Length: 149
Image (cartoon, rainbow, N blue to C red; front, side, top):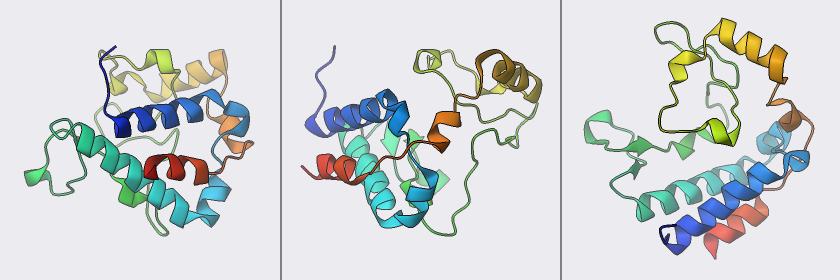
């Protein structure tokens, strides 16, 4: 495996921690009460990724100046709108924001494949992959501390 920079390693460890603890899933109610920690953690992750991979990741909002993948950590704030899980996206075919298993996230993944019909069949077959998030709680303090280390 390619050697990662220390900030990238911390981000990977953080994402791995979040992915491996479904019983302690991210609580949306906790995030709404703790926007300061949520935003700081998001900005920390975005900054670490941008510094480690400046040609691949950006936090630049202006499309004309943007290159790579936008990580918009500023959406972690009061009054911000987001496309939540199972939201129909404004693209041809009406693709749906869909929770995935990590092994499904591959270079050939096409978000357009997840139409309403496909997603409804998927939920019937596999259950709601997002459901554990609604019941677990997890503090972001440790994640923020790991980014600041």
